Amino acid sequence: MVNWLWAAMILSGFAMGLVRGAGTSLTQSFFSQAAAGFQTGLQVLIYIMLWFGLSRIAERAGVLELLARCIQPLVRPLFPTVPKGHPAFSAMALNLAANFLGLANAATPFGLKTMQELSRLNPRPGEASQAMITFLALNSAAIGLVPSTAIALRAAAGAANPGDIVVPSIVATAIPLGVVLAVDWVIRQVDPRRPSLPPPRGGRLWRAG
Amino acid sequence: MAGWVIPVLVSTILLVGLARRVDLLDAFVDGALEGAQMGLRILPFIMAIYVGVGLFQAGGVMDLVAETLAPLAQLLRLPVELFPLMLIRPFSGGAAMGLVADILREHGPDSLVGRTASIMEGSSETTFYVLTVYLGAAGVKRSRYALPLCLLGDLVGFVAAGWAGRTFF
Image (tube, each protein chain N blue to C red):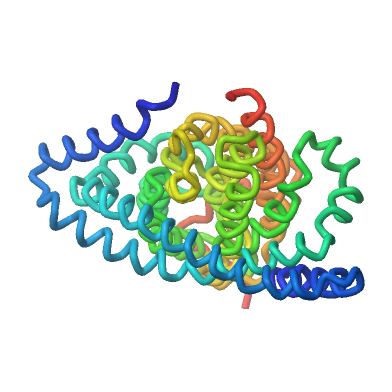
């Protein structure tokens, strides 16, 4: 999809521009755009380094674990099929905490761990369970406290106040989060595969064959 | 109005680090080095998108598309300039960053379009990437309603970003 769009942009630009007889300016913008992109990229790199450096301090100070401990009780009601105290919850809380702090690289391993833990509870291996889908929805709509890349891009573009989008971003994330969780809840109520009880330990032994 | 955000944030991080006896400089340098790697990965994306969008505009195709999409843009109350970003955001985080950088250059970071693009970047996720990686880790082949649900979240997020951009500034 991205490949297709990128090629379509360049090819259609060349085609339409050539038809209009603007070959020279097309050639010029081909090279000048690359140079402009490089300059912006370099500036963005500087601000990403700055932010990653600061966030590593927060990470080493144990902010991640602290936040995860606060998040865990909040997400538990969203996963009625996962038994209380299951290791999926701690991995999930760390994933959400890392997302919240904008530590994208730290978030992924915890997310993978969560999925593996949830797949152990999955009554139908190979098919996404309700708990998995809820986690994915939560993760993809997850709230970030600091939209660090957006701030870096704004700083590179010379914004008067690069951080002025922090509060609106949080609000703009909370809305889809609420909508997605509500829709997910409704789907679960009508889902024909609604599990009545969490599968007991070793429950797979019950299956025929 | 929002001038306090960055100073307060940075001071808080430093104070917490001091209180927990973190070797501040060592941690900063370590993290910044990782940031440099990430930045280097992103740089070619930004170049690629600048070239793509630049030619799209130079050839005059952008104006044509903008005219065609105007009714849809009016319905969602979103600027037409943000449509490429909304299309690409769920697929590629790097390409989306390139588009935001391009929009900020073209319209200015403090314009309505620029701010809305920044909010979109800060409040959305590379949905297809997340789903592919995470479902793959769980050995899941049939994702059921996961994809439509997450894409719905993206769409609502875009409209909410447009609303937040109009309301907060």
